[in-house]
Image 1 (cartoon, helix red, strand yellow):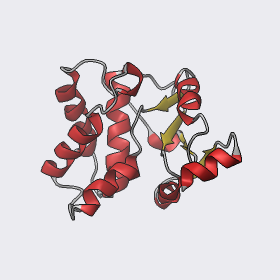
Image 2 (image 1 turned 90 degrees about the vertical axis):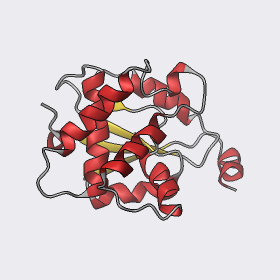
Image 3 (image 1 turned 30 degrees about the vertical axis):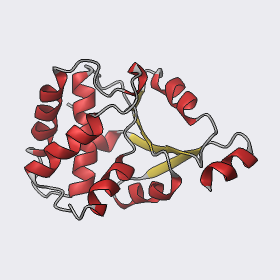
Length: 168
């Protein structure tokens, strides 16, 4: 059982060139934290919205969105959500399993939760996970989580000059 009401949500972000991937890897090793590699949920949703694909609770959209988030653009293991190719079908089945339990659908909220539920199930996480960290690589999507969740933020800044250069 994966109860989102009992979990705290933090959004991790930066303006760039601050070591956010390093911080992500450190947080990933914490036994109470769920953080999905390379997700940037709202950033990926924007790709579909720019293509005018906005029916978020359509089975076809959900399947395409999952394919998109699981596509590994970088060839290192730490950026992969799934470690084995055969897990993709199982991951999708967990997403739809979670969504089928919902009576009143809130598309973005429920899709975000379903992806984290599937990630937790496929990795055999137990109830010991108390914190979900959403890694948004750019800060202008961070406020969107407040629409659905009580949200706290972790913004990392290392060198203000590099951050400004990265944001430009």
